[in-house]
Image (cartoon, rainbow, N blue to C red):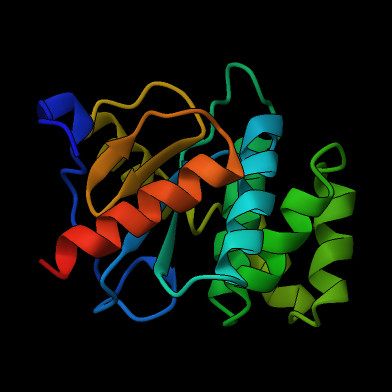
Length: 182
């Protein structure tokens, strides 16, 4: 990989507080900062799911709702966190990306019901904005790493800046894996 500057590095390391798929000790860690209402993030999410079927790596998702463009994004991120509080983050995450054009309150409640959340707890969390701080922390960590838009990916803490193309992303993951084994 080429030399990087501070704007190309993930400055907030992953931790047990992150939402992860795969072991944090994997040779490749892919971090995405995303917005549930961003269509490009939905496309990247589908690419990542496809790559996960072919390759082993740790995938980390962090919220970066761009509320000035996507008015439902913050609420969707909080819904994902409310689901996480009931150990169903990834189920809600996938539903939100599968239904990007339907993220208002009624739909969020419907998705919570589909994945069998405790609806009273979900509604309380959403009404009281219990998970706003968690979403804000994700946003701040993204800003610290130089982000201003979504989707944003980091492969082993280095910003992925190539085309949003599955073959190129697979190549970046393979290169990161190879550099770890040297």
